[in-house]
Length: 403
Image (tube, rainbow, N blue to C red; front, side):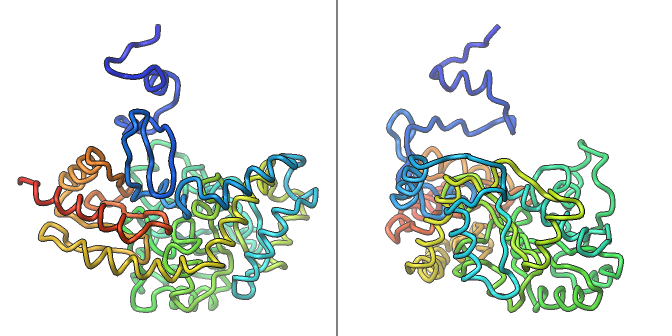
C-alpha cells in the first residue's frame, strides 16, 4: 500500500514512493522550471544555482542556443541507427569542431551516453592498444559508478559492497612523485582526473602531470585524463590539461559538454581509436551514443563556449569568488576557474552551510570524499551580481554558525 506523507504534493509523494533513491535524505526540491542561473520550485521560490547540475549546465538553464538546437534537430530526426553506422550531421560537426580545438594527436572522438561509459570505453581501448591489463588510478578518485569505473575508484568504502570488481587495478596517491615507480611495462594505462574532484578539487602541483606523462612514455603506458568535470571551459580553458603543459593519449569528457543533456565522449588519435572497429568488430558499441538531438545540444554548447568570452571571463569570476569568500571560518578556497570548493572547519559546518543556503535560496552541494568541502560550480554564464548575491548569503550563514 502506498504511504502518505504529510505536507507533500502528490508528485513529491510519488517521488519517494516510486523513484529509486540514491541517498537517505535527498534535497527533494520540487522543480517547476529553470532559467539562466536560477531554478524555481513549484511554490515559485527561486534558487540561485551554484551547482549547475554538478558541473553539467555549462551555459546555465535553458540556454536559448541549446534549446533552439534541440528543437530544430528533434523536428528533423531523432534516433535512427546504432552508433557509427549512419552519417548524422550533428555528430559529425560536433566531432570535427572538437578536433579543431584539441592538440595533436587528439583528433577522433567516440560519443557515448555518459562520463562513466566514456571511462569504460577508454579503459577498453587502452587494454586493446597495449595488450596489457593493469590499470593504475589515484586514491580518492571518482570516475563513475559502473563496474569498470568503480574498479578504478580509489575509495574502498564505496567499492566494498559491490565486490568482486574487475581485477588488475592499482592505486597511487595524486601528487606523490615517488608513487610513479609503480607505473611499469605491465601497466596498460594510468587514469587520472586532471583536477581531483570528489577528493576536494585538488590541483596537480610541482609539474606532477608532466612527470606522469614522462613515466608513461618511458614504460609504453597510455595516459588517460578524466576531464568530465573540468571540461568545456570550466577552468578557463576548454580542458583542464591545457593549463599543465601535457597532452593525454586518451581524453575523457562528459557533464558540461551537453548543455544539460546526457552525454559522454572519449577522444584519441585516429590510429588508436581505429582499434575498436575490428578484431573484433564492434569492439565498443552503443545504441544511443551520438544521438542527433544530444549531439546538436553539444555542438551548440561548444560553439557558445568557443565563440564568446565565457572561458576568459571564468578566470575573472574565480578572482571575484576568491575576493568575496574571505571569512575566519573558511580555511581555503580550492580549485580553478568555476570549479571551486570552500573548505570549512568541519563536516558539520559544511552541512550547515549547504542546508541553510538552500533555505535562503542558494543551491550548493557536497563533494564525494571530502566532508569539509562545499561545492561551488555555477554555470559559466553566471553574472557578477549573482556571484555577489550568493557569496553574501554564504558569509552571513557562516556568521551565524555557533560551535
